[in-house]
Length: 493
Image (cartoon, rainbow, N blue to C red; front, side):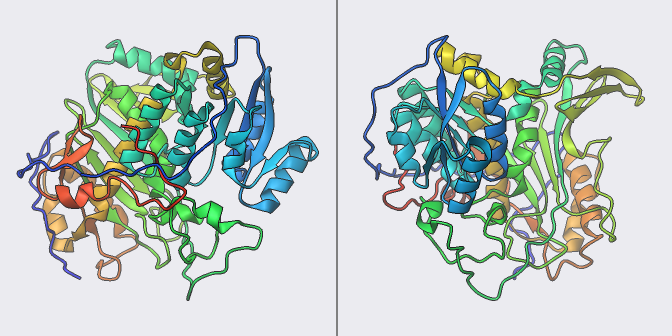
């Protein structure tokens, strides 16, 4: 492996170096590969029952069943999962078996008694499932990240507007009362100018193991339907469910799994409704050798002005015994918003401290049913502006995760000594790189087995939603995935 970085880093305070090179745009588009029989559009009135189908029934989908069941005027009429055991178990557990049960999502879309769908599938199905639902006249609650890539996220927004659908992203913290109160205060200038927004995904993740060859798909899973738009490739992971999060064809690593929540809150806090012009990532998968492909240790810098977003992923503990996770100003799975007057630590609510570390104000108020109730209220009002975490916000925040991962995926190994040189400074880049290096050295001593990967600094055109400058051809090739018939993402632009 080449241990020389392909991009020179230059120190910056809150700025990136300006990239050189010409703009390039990804050409071509995918044609729709599916023909759906669209029912007549139906919009639930203020007093009408909202009939919903839950798609994807394991951990998150089961939570959605529990929550939607508690909302008056909502009836779950169908369940959908490609795993026949999970489908039967959820139907029996919640409904005594008396509910519509489907393995094929397209059957759900053909039902005239379904007003809305809740999508808790693997990531590679999120956008296609949402667009198809919009075309079929259904409103959509789609889990995070709303897309598996940047291009298809914009397709959901386009579909929602074209077909006049209500589409909410599963960024539940948008409905936290405490967080809403803090955002109102910081936007109102209560704590002065924001200096930097930090997203922190400090969540311990163990090895997923390493298999010697392709694994058999469990007999209770329809693998063709599970793979959907992806090729049904040989399964190279020990655990079929969940561990797809750490493999690029299906997941987006912890940046897109857990981190999307904090990434969205950071963007919300700094008040940006557009994408940044530059991104860079540093990290790797350290501490074990397994079938995972995504980083378990990563830092992403997103060049918003005047307050950048810095995102950190820590999947490993801070000590070799595996007990203590990283902690930044009290934040683990959280965010830290640093302002002139102090800093805020929290996710669903939190605490603002002054610059001396003394508590100034606590923001309380949990999440509960608020996000799901908000979705149902918007389904009734037919006003997408009523939504917390409307799909346009879901797309932008998901794109931030994709941008960071694209830089990481295009990266090359950086020698340890060269990285240490980049940590000698008093700027944001040096600070976050040094903390990441110090943390990583607990698990890797020389990085010859698992090298530290430095991604290129990528320029980005927010309007075109494509990369510019040097490395843009390679980066733009990752803007969208390949789709297979009949599971093809329609091009609605």
